[in-house]
Image (cartoon, rainbow, N blue to C red; front, top):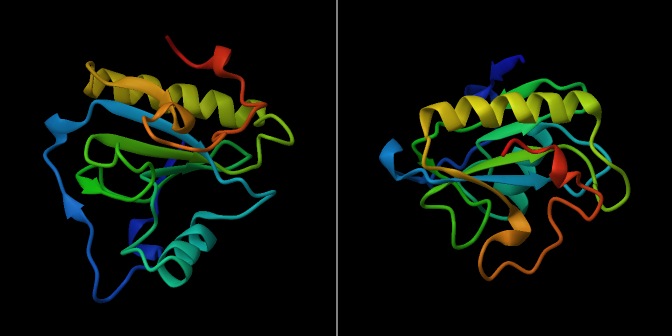
Length: 152
């Protein structure tokens, strides 16, 4: 599992800032898909900042199809990734549209490793799909996402 910290390389607002939280508040690990056929953390950050007007990228981690994990926000950051669960959730996005196809094996292996690592640090956290967040109206992370491959 390879984690590359690119927080300082991503687009961010000069005037808006995300709130912060104590790490002890983390109790959800929320899995997303980008809903796109491709993309990079940099393109997602640009879209979140310039098209949506957010302070920065909405995710804490982005997992590319080759399995590389990009750290895109500090875990103390209250980013915008799942309305109703941002205060206590960590957003993990896999690049791809999993309504059309499944994630790559490399993505699932990296996601599983990352989730296990985070669960060691935040043992009371539970793994959730974005669509399981109360009030969400989305199929995220896609109807073909293999939920049975997530750690229990």
